[in-house]
Amino acid sequence: MVQDRLQEIQGHIGDIIQRFELTTRKAPQAQQQSASRVAYSGPSFQSHINEVIERQSARHGVSPELIRAVVAQESGGNPGAMSKAGAIGLMQLMPDTARSLGVNPYDMEQNVDGGIRYLKDMARKFDSLDEVLAAYNAGPGAVQKFGGVPPYAETQDYVKKIRHSLRDIKS
Image (tube, rainbow, N blue to C red):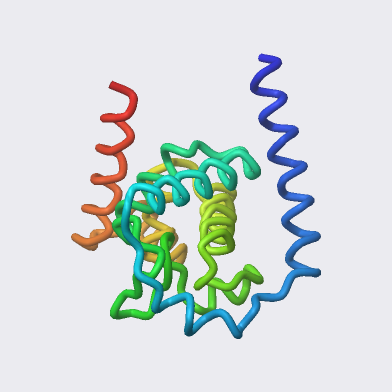
């Protein structure tokens, strides 16, 4: 009970910090091009990615396992990933979403920070993890329109794969 209350308080503090950061932090545009061309590989780099995920997850009071599962599904752990639709980085933030969150999607730390905050925003709108994940993948409008996970094969597969990853971790 005390642990649950502590987590709830940490979440509220994180939300207050986020609101402050959104009004004071600007995404550095100069880093975009060079950061997207860096080669990403090797165990030390993977360790760095895990450190970023751990740090940002702790900061926002979100399970690092969930974030790792989302990152694996979104970008395969490649911070330089860019989708055909234009989503960028580890957590595949769309440029408009990154802009609204005040983050540079080409900066790994900011990308994970923005992705977690966006997931938390979806968690405030939807009741289940499946709906939150579906909203992250297909957009909140699609989840609202269909009253749950939309009947898109890609989104249903996305939710299923992340749920499977989380079950594997718990086993």
